[in-house]
Image (cartoon, rainbow, N blue to C red; front, top):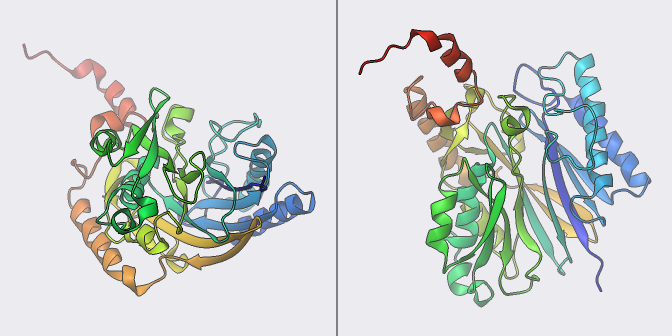
Length: 371
């Protein structure tokens, strides 16, 4: 039986420069040194360290499978080392996403976000890694659906026989902590009913139903951790990550990127309390600014070669995405003009973990009956 490769992307906000802007180079250096040591100890096979805005991103390959305690501990200890550097530099929100003091076997539920895929590598195994800043896990619902369920985006759903059977979507209800599996195309309308409510129902994984990938192997995985649910209050946006496999019975890389060719609206932005457009950016513009945004997405492409990362390719550093960026800037103008009014500001039920409850409590005794 072929040896399996696991690709893990684990991220956390452990401190940034000039507010919620960008990860300091010393944190990147510290993370690289930590993961280099993990390679020498045989814990991981290869790694790449980067950032998405103010989030430190650890991209690792190994042979240990998903949710492996040793891999997650390696990430946790790396984030702790970086937090110490962030405190030394007096960076903003040092250690923000490390919500507990002790590691408990898995970073899920502790603050950092993670997406992992275990696979038998195909002869050529291209992957895309998408890293968002200033938004929530459900922000991936629309582009992931377009990649794997929308023939107007992925032509392979129409003309590639290996994709004709469609894909299986694993959807999590992140409030009641349940999941459901729905097949497309036959259950497409049911799927859309759920994932259109992106604040509660999020796509966790996608599976192929035919072709060159085993049906038990995920072909896409997203982080679904909600910081506010863990901390009980607003401590920053979740800033999700995603792994998407491409080609050979799966959407072509070009089809995967086509899903980002227009700036759809997501929740997050300033103070995690506003709707705004996703702006896709290359590494040269990999930071947020205006109103702590707009929400950003960085995309990196790799080839896996016996658990080695070949790359990356900066997927959005392309003039073809300039129209999407211009439209995102125009949409940001439009949304900002609403100021504190909905639909720019999130509806009341989504303001639960912001300072809104404190304001409501302040005026609790002033309300009078009008009956």
